Length: 91
Image (tube, rainbow, N blue to C red; front, side, top):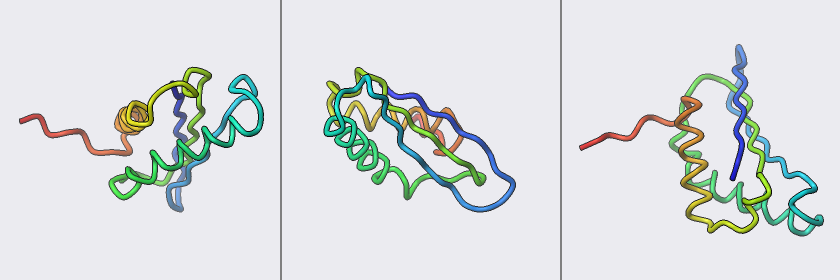
């Protein structure tokens, strides 16, 4: 539902951008998806740790119909794969 690109930088902090394509619909739908992505990331941002980087999150067309919890879960998985969130402890 999302695509994440992470580009490391030599200095500075962590920056994030949210992109939506016109294939998601009109401006209202695209803005709604960006707000949903920002809100999903807001809950994870305090746990994000890693080297300085620019992170780009692009919503794919099927993101418009998915539930918020699955959107957040997928974003969490993508951030883990990028090395920006610590791996889960398996008990």
